Length: 173
Length: 312
Image 1 (cartoon, chains in turn orange, blue):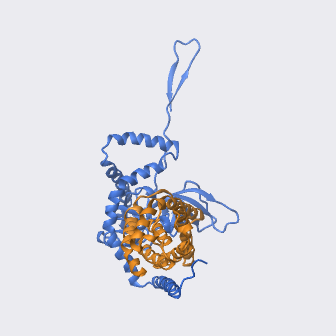
Image 2: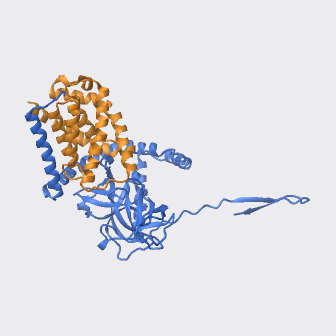
């Protein structure tokens, strides 16, 4: 039942993916900008059970991997997002102090984005990718954290609403 | 522990992790289906990105103006003067004028070197959340663009075509951390390898430790066999500082790229190089200080009136 409901979320993620690839990447925001698909996937996972969180990470990771700007091999972002989304869902599952409080979800998402990028970087190093200067890495990570902290409160309500439509109203913030 | 999970849940996680590792293995082994997925996605996304570029361009221009304001006083004064001029022009012509200027610059550069180029508009700039520096242009294989072709702006090197699709192409910028190019110093002909660092600055590593490199030296592309990926003679950047550490095995220098990658609107892809190496012909001229006119007045006691003498 949950798996079937999870499939209903595919059009939502496809729309977010198109939004990211067609509009967000065009804005040329300072400090590296943000990845709306990554943010949505982590917020979505924070509202789910760990299994659905991992499935969400798998789906969103596949979308990020087919993006032409993804430097790593296919499956690189998938692996990272399965782990990140599962971890976030695991932390929030059954704990209303985390799941019921928007500030905690924003904090969790911001940390999750930075952690996911750091894991992506480490995996990339292990796969032989070039990562650039240390200062640039810290600049991009700090930029991501900054933008995620700004964007996630703005879209949290919408995602919570959509999540409630797909999985039932119990998860609504 | 709040959540222990059941066997079915654990199995699902394991299956997902194994699938992702399987995908990584397949991609690293060069399986064609995986490459086809990305190509297909990009082909489908290109029209949407073109619409997105058109919709976002006013916002992007505004944001670009805001982020570049106030870096230095001179820049601010220049911008103010430019803004006064721009007020007189029609709003709708601003984007077109800027692109025309870039196009003129790039055609001048390509014309001087004798390169055959295909012009293209930048339709998307890759997100740097994946630690890469890329952009997408609106011309692809149908316009004669293929992988490993040099991409230029009016100021010099932009990067190299990494992937070419039917109607678009992905360009790896020279600032990308994975970017490397054989470079030579104009005049002295010393050679080295320039690497991107994720910013507008690159690092030049000289191959011969006994030679000297100086601040202000211009760097040019050495060129590759058959002009791919790099045609020879393309201006890259200028040396800003030199690391002369006594214990260093090789001499290194910081290089500032001539091209400002964040303001690119129009670029040119070199589809065939010139028959002869342009050598140092494309090195941009160094800015010459404008002489300031001064007036010296010699006053002689007892003379009727002092006579002004203009000197330069």
